[in-house]
Length: 108
Length: 112
Image (cartoon, rainbow over all chains, first blue to last red; front, side, top):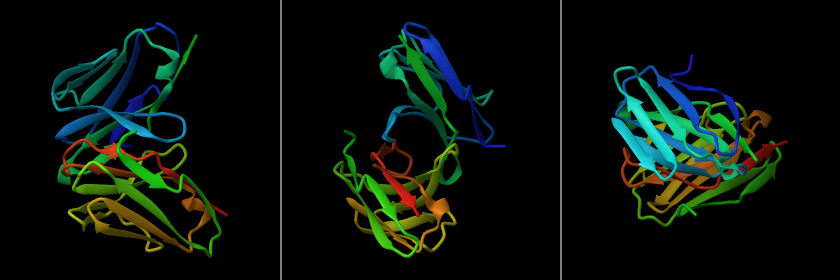
């Protein structure tokens, strides 16, 4: 079992839909990260959070430390949001551990 | 554009070849990382450098040899690789070891 689990693995949505991607982890962490990887490989860091909620444009990330759970929400989804979304946690010794990613496809 | 560049973007090599991957960051960061991303597997940390010193080697086989001549440049020297080493190799940098990491576009490596 991975230390970081994401669900769903694959997600297809229509443009405009509200999207939620979930991440659960089993280790003690100092921070949780949400990353976006577009086809071709480049990875962009979306959020780093250790408590509560952060918002950037149409993206919202929340974390519940007690439940060891985080969600990434996308409002008013658009085809350009199509990408792989990766959850990662900073654990002991500042080491990043990654989930396997959620592949999102937003269609017109 | 994240401020981290990697060359080459694609590389095909035979098992007896020697090649090197290059990473350069223009962000003034002090930490640099090599990651391996294989199909359907999570990103795997390979090496970490802080202030040019290697601080982590995540049980990586010796056929992968990192080099960090200064805080802006990181190399991964490849020698006698195996087909299972085919993957996307990503470089990243951060200001400190607990700060947000900025990733390069990756090098897609194919070992024949």
